Image (cartoon, rainbow, N blue to C red; front, side, top):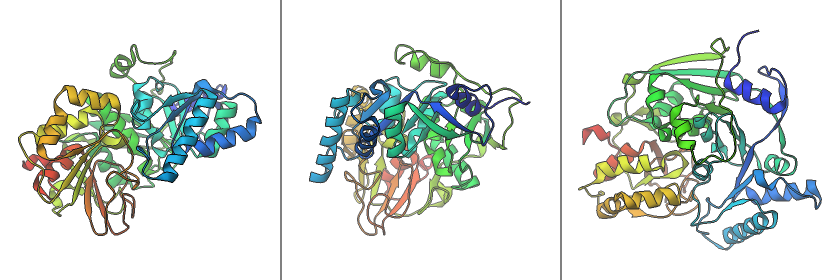
Length: 418
């Protein structure tokens, strides 16, 4: 019998079995389950039906208001109110508007995420937590409700792909460019229901923010989860922050992988995913289309490191007269840090609009919805038809550096050209 991957080890431990093989169906104990203002109410409805008045596992439940915040209309306000009432009734971990932020960043900042944990969320980008060595994945509200009530959920053990990235990155190239490059190579179904593991000198040298971006967008290649082996950067971040104990898990040296991909970091350039697919990837220098909106934020690229790189390009410059730039810090903590560092002043002086944490524009909800025929360069994760507004609008996915450079010139721009 050969060695095991990280995903196989975590799922076998959570299922209480000695060994898990790809394809096995296991019932596993879940450490935490997260829901937001769109997915939370139906999850609580399922849970209450199962429990029939009994107690729920409230210490494992994290509730975050983040998608339609602030409420854009009466229906979204009513949905938010119902979620608030459920969270208070069941005494869950609850993060109100103004006291949290985008759900995935809240989960990380508030210490729920740690190596070796099994975490689910009723949001597809829950896979972000793999940047810390966790097995994390998105589920539906029904599955979340089952975990509210029982603490357990079934999983099919996935095959694992290994990605090895070696070398030094070029200036202005970051985690977003790495993951876009990979999706461009393997396609949106290249990791379908597989786990991804990342290795190599490039990954070791990346900030945790860039690792989160890579894990976040693994689902755009169809991955069930993405796991980056935890190291001292992770352990340092978690000191004084993490809730409870955790057990860091690493793959065996002789672990068996479904595929192995090797990448040279020096060959990766600033990338852009053109409409209408994250796999429609080209070099930013090969795209020169005028834009109407530049969006910096989301669970993919709204952290302080992302704001810093954008501010470094915008300092002393102005957003193009034909462009509106929207800047959305991922959490209240990020917003406060950006204020402290003077980044918000840079954005405001450049002519950008800055607002509190919200997912609104990313899903086409509000706070940045696109009109018929408009083009947006965005640091978000999806560019499907109608994703950020009108079905005839066009979304180009890129890094914070490309977003900022494009906001300055009025057209999609490789930041190195500035």
